[in-house]
Image (cartoon, rainbow over all chains, first blue to last red; front, top):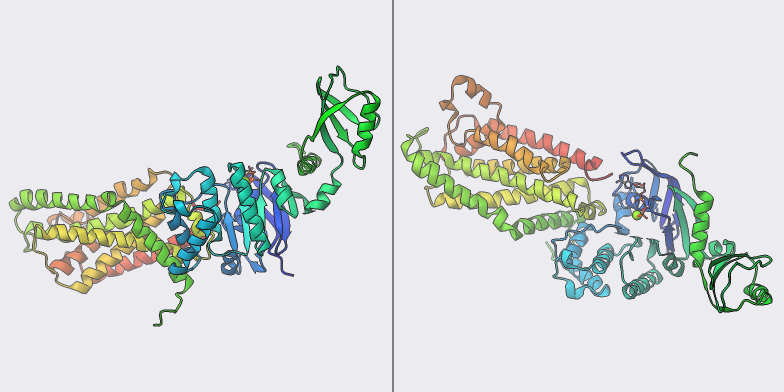
Length: 310
Length: 261
Ligand SMILES: Nc1ncnc2c1ncn2[C@@H]1O[C@H](COP(=O)(O)OP(=O)(O)OP(=O)(O)O)[C@@H](O)[C@H]1O
Ligand SMILES: [Mg+2]
């Protein structure tokens, strides 16, 4: 099957000499909900910028639904919708005009452009604000405006660069539902985010990019399954002065009533509680120090860090 | 043509950019349309009525009549230039140029859209200045096709020049350097207010290197039927410049100079 996005050997060195991408390969199948993760400066936005025709690549190829971005750019660009990380609309234009104009740039005649604008302004709950100048929107509304704008031409591949940055909890959940529905209806979605629980709950596949290279790529479930062990934080009923020595577990006392325990892969929680009970420690409550994806992510970064002086 | 006929996507894209550009300068009309009306009125009061009445006829015309074509063209030049340079620069600066770059539009449509926006402003201002002139003098047109061709082509040329200026501009100051230090002096020295016959021979020769001289005189010929130079050479010069600047602008856009990293 033709992938929604195929990226091969993509490299980018900026004029400043910064090598943002050192040759990445990505393959996103049609219908995927894909997370592109990585720490600040990893090269995510650079990769998206190249796919969006906003950044010129230094080497490599990009194809969208089989359309090469260089040779068949009209077809390729028509199928992509982009929600950039930074606001990039004309702040003096009314919200509705921004959408209608964007549709026009995609060659959609005025009448249909107006219908499309209305459809997405309603879906993203901006219809009441249609006559407002974009600069008068709140931060969360501006994000939704960019999502609406990215959809006016009904792209088959939607790429969102940190769409939920600075968005409140309620709207974030509404956005998640919106994106999930969109994905079920057939739109392929690629998303970057620093909220790993977001990626974990939304995305089925994942690539982790670090210092301009892909360090992990595959199914979310497989990745999580490979994470070694969990890090638990226990609140104790009594107080301790030193961390207990438990066979098979690494324990660390954070404060007299809080104990952190590293649970090795394959070890059940019952074994931990049995060991704790044996030394007379009672647990009031327990939580994960990181969520599972966070844990996997941090581990990947540790394993793949290249120091300045290699 | 049937109502259901769908326009070519490029045509729709072009019209969208042009409409957006026209809305922009209409929305801020006190900055774009009003000032030239006021300056023109002042020119007529000062140069036409007060000073002009003490100057004898030039080339058989009253001084006030003689300067009308130059004043109109001066407004067309500076406004088609100003529109594109400031609009395209702020498009770059605010980054909504990205809305165009991600879309399936070729560079030449983007260029055509912005240049047409500049031409539209040049023409609107040209008409406004002409109307103001009509309050002070009796206007005449000697050769309509020439008038239309000169005004239109000059507007295209300077809209393109404004585009190139915007591509290279890195700060807001950069968009006023060329108008202040190049355009305005060339226009003033291009025979708006005098006939080059009045200059000493050496400066007459130097003036021939000023492209504005040809444009101003071509319009003067179109309106009054008198000129310091041959009108056909003026048209050739304008068209050659349009070709050169157009090619440069397209190349810059294609390479993404100043807009893509
Ligand atoms: N226009 C630019 N010119 C020069 N260097 C740049 C430019 N844009 C990005 N970079 C550099 O390229 C590297 C990758 O940046 P990029 O924006 O792609 O990271 P990112 O993964 O999106 O990070 P974040 O999570 O912070 O958004 C960084 O070192 C950055 O400083
Ligand atoms: Mg980024």
